[in-house]
Length: 205
Image 1 (tube, rainbow, N blue to C red):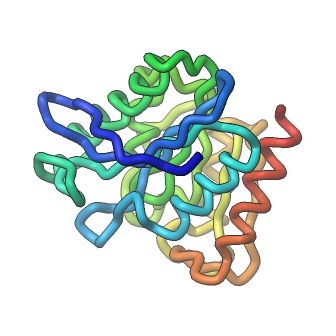
Image 2: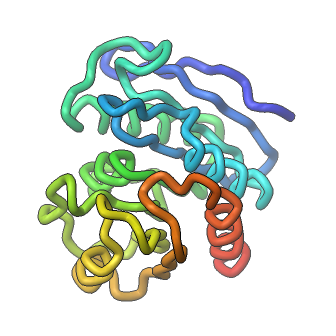
């Protein structure tokens, strides 16, 4: 199997995605970094997360937020983007996926966190570099859904010490992994992300 281009519907807009359907009930939706700073579903971290999930037998759906690539609409400061995530989760759910993870990188973490109370289909939340030094996360309270958080030691947008402090509010049980030498963009550290995510998936299976 290979990923195929699909179009989701959110708010009457066509949202572009790449979907690979593997047998079984497990799936993941992956949200990309900030659209205004070149973020898209083709990002290196998004691809690494998708690959880690695929190798563990999950169907994967990465998508472009509204206004990115072939997705219709315009950047909407998190509000519309939340609906884009909703439509991606619904897409997997409608295909019979009942165990769905929601993974996000940078801005994608923030959008996923914004909707975590309403995203009923998402059982678990995986965060790579939640940008706590760039966007306000003070709205996010305790949720058992946050299960894995990854940061880099050189990341100045998601400072790992600040993230670690916030985890005491978000979920003390969260697995927290810090990748030595990685900055916010993880160039050259994609395999490390795959390893950490893969290990988490195997241990929590």
